[in-house]
Length: 583
Image 1 (cartoon, rainbow, N blue to C red):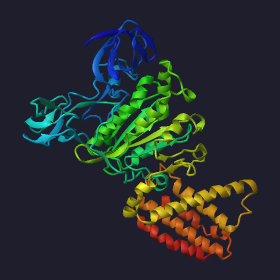
Image 2 (image 1 turned 120 degrees about the vertical axis):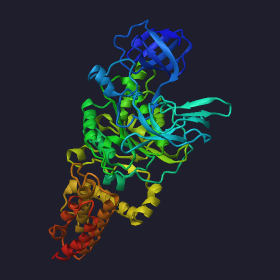
Image 3 (image 1 turned 180 degrees about the horizontal axis):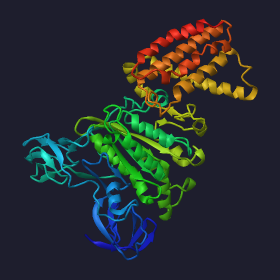
Image 4 (image 1 turned 135 degrees about the vertical axis):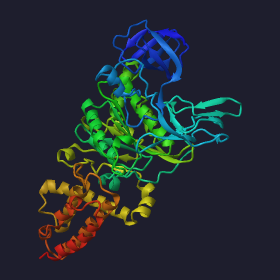
């Protein structure tokens, strides 16, 4: 290793003068504390380094050590259940060594390299292995089997192999000999550059929804497995809580939750909640299929920029094993602010609102790593990206929100007025959208019912009609409306309160199976049709409302258990009886 000296320090940006042997995106160690850094700029005279830890007390003239390696994530068993910072340092181990505040310098491995794992070999001598194929497995948690993959760029014939047993991360368990006679040792661990997408055999057409159990998302604004969604909203609109619900209940195999620049108390809440939660499918701790990356607002700003890439790299690793992974990034606005701060220290020409000119390309590079793929081992896997956006003053015209809209196909716009009215999730149905409906229609027709897409369009039409009618009501009051339009307002209220509004603290309402969602839509549609027939016979909307059937349909979400969906079929007779009694 060769050494260079620090020439200047400007926050997380360090420069080296007249040293020409650095490479772009090379990882280096800065100063006597050996802080982790990355080369981000090289010109004739200066090499610019972005430091991922606090540069307080670092001095000019201290050494910089080359590694000739890119900034990489350590991949192996032990990732799940763990909590890392933005550059994959385990926070539990760091707190044991240094207390509650993150320390500088290397010395702590990302994964426990002494722990033994119960490994089962899946190959034998003479087998020919290619990149990405599985050569061994071990139970990483009670829910997830860890599958060891042949590193990318490595292939050959198995010439030496260990027996099944307990091994540490650095133990060699398989030796491959390639066609040139070179030997390659396979252990339980590998590394991968975080800024480089892992390769796949092919990208597949998106065709399966990510079921979240949240009615407004699953029914009105769905996201596909392998898709990308944005959750924009002002302060207090419920971005973090929406992502918590998705992380708890969506049907992904593994959750990667990236707390990027959020407040420390919010990440504390995530850690406490997730440690207490039970996975609804397996009844095991939810943390057994979750990895948390916590880079809060008081941590070094450069590591915040790296945390997004660390999270997506870990997700791609598990995708390559054949799992469906959901990444929650909270929030990409804080990540963009980190880009802006570093760009300012680099004295780059600012673009709109001070953000760097390359902001759109960085956002696109992140969201493009989502996808439903066939892995190198021939298995299906996916990475679904859900990024929160925090526009200042809830202004959706600002650069991060607008550029994010260009690269995602589901847009769940949170409305502060809905949140203040206690309507959660506070997704505004008038400005939110999903472009995945055409891709998912075949799945809905096959697995739910051909009527589902029609019912969804009918409900959205009623809600949009309500929005137009409310403009009239605000001007001259509701008394001037004819009864059929008053009925539209009442049906819209049933949709809003009885279907879109969901109580995360109610055992039957926090998660709703898709079958129940569809049956609820059918009931609301039936109520609309039958009530229209009654109103058409010159009986008043007031008389119809006095039957109480509208409020009874609203309370279905609480009254009918998710395990007793056959009860919903009895409500058709209740609607008929109630409306038949109208005088």
